[in-house]
Amino acid sequence: MFVLYVAVLLQLQFGTKFNLTIPQMSERKRKIERTLLLQSIIICGALQLETATFQSFQSLSLEGDASLYLHIFQNFCTILDSSVHPIVLFVFNADIRNGLAELITSQRKVFVQAFSIVPPNANLTTQSSPQQ
Image (cartoon, rainbow, N blue to C red):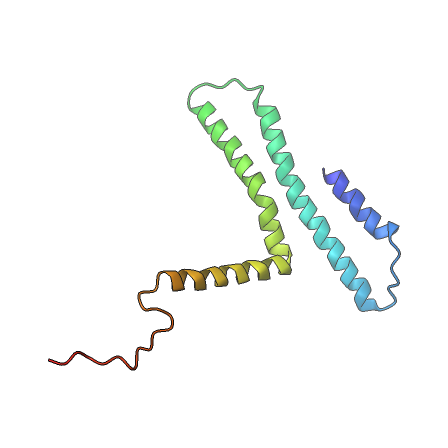
């Protein structure tokens, strides 16, 4: 998997023709390439960890608590593998962070309006106390 990421990165590096005469653009391109490489290392590392645990632990025949801890570790690796990609996208991609923040704030507004005791269009200043 990592080899495929590196192949794509090399294709972007050498296969596409950019007219980068401005030094800032060249630096920006290098920064993007470094973040892509770092993302691929993290994602592929998690995939390789999960694959290695399942392939190597199958040959072990453990009994009792050791078997329990082995299964817990394998389940942890599966959960880690499933959660690494969204976390990497959230950390490295500003568009996804902004979209998530917008989604959370819009859902919060809907939640507050749905469970509000006072209707949102009620005028609280004109209500008078009952006469006795």
